[in-house]
Structure formats: structure tokens, C-alpha cells
Length: 116
Length: 116
Image (cartoon, chains in turn blue, yellow):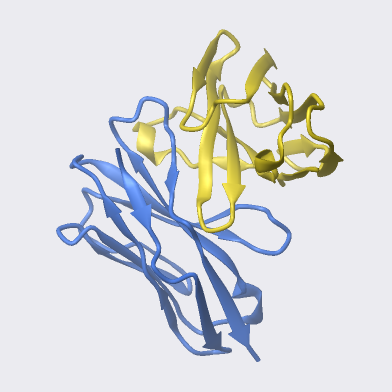
């Protein structure tokens, strides 16, 4: 079974600075997808960014980018120019391509605080 | 209007009571999911459904049942609620277009359930 680990329960960053959230995963599959979801205080789960394992190029979405290290099974999220609205819980998630149920396996989450 | 809605948003109930959480979607997706969120554990899959006639157990189905009344509706029931079922519950949908793992899951706003 796949597992996803987020080793940082809480992180803080100064507004306008850069922060990196860590995620590692364990799998025997070679083809899979990785996601970062944001959960603000409203509780809504919002997809931030996705990465296909077969792509070597790291995904980017505006101020959000990932550092995907397939051999190390690491998938960190970098937030540049942090804004107050980035304060939220962030979840890393895994979805294997052999997973007929299209089920997501989530990490335990990292709470990000942004200081003004 | 929200594409995935959940009712109620918050519920307090007592041990032994039967309770139903409802999910509706207007996205036209065939696949629907119920997850449970606990602090430090992320989200875990309870049940999922590919269509009205296809219901599958997830990682933590004990103590729960589901009903897929229509493509747009997927309900989660706790037959006899117990305190350790106190959690945040999410419904999600996805569309099986392209490789399974690419499918983004669209989440409802969540239901916070407290069992006393």
C-alpha cells in the first residue's frame, strides 16, 4: 500500500518570503500522480498543483512550484512571495495510475502560518 | 452556485443515533467519494462509487454505509454513531477522462460531525 508522509506539522513564513513544504511517499508503482491541496479555514479543499511522475519537468502554477525527486520519492511544494491568503493546511496526495478506483492517499498535512 | 454541496455543514449528535450526511453534485461526474479527515491523519477514504450500481469500500468503511440514489447524489450513513466517528467528512467527485490518476477530485465544503 502506498503511504504519504508530511514531516512538518506546522510551518511559518514571513509575508513576501519563500517557504518549502516537504512530502515523501512510498510506492512500488512506476506511473502515478502527485498533488498538493490547500485547505483554508473555510475547510474547502482546493487543488494547488499536480505532477505526473513520468514528466521530469517540475510543475509550476504562478507562485507555486514543486521539486519532484522521483528516485528519492520526494515531492516538496515551494511557495514564493508568500501572501496572507496562503495561510492554510496543505495536504500532499498520491494517486497511482493502476488505481482503478482513482483513490487519493493523503499525507497528514502541514499547517502554514503567514506572518505580516 | 457550488458544484458539490454537502448537508448539513455541521451536526452534533449523540452516541447510538443514526445519522445521514448527504452529498449532491451538478458536475455530471460519475465517480463520487466519501472521505473522513482527522487531525494529523489527513483524509482517508470511506467509500467510493463509479455509478449508481457500483459501490466499493474504501480504507475505513467499518461503521459506515452509503447509498447512491442517483448520479448526482451520494449519501453516507452512520447506523449507530460513536464518539470516535467525530470528524470532518468530505464528499468528492471526479470525471474518468484520460489516465485515471490525472483526474482531479472536486471536493464539497465538508460536514463537521460531533458525536457526544
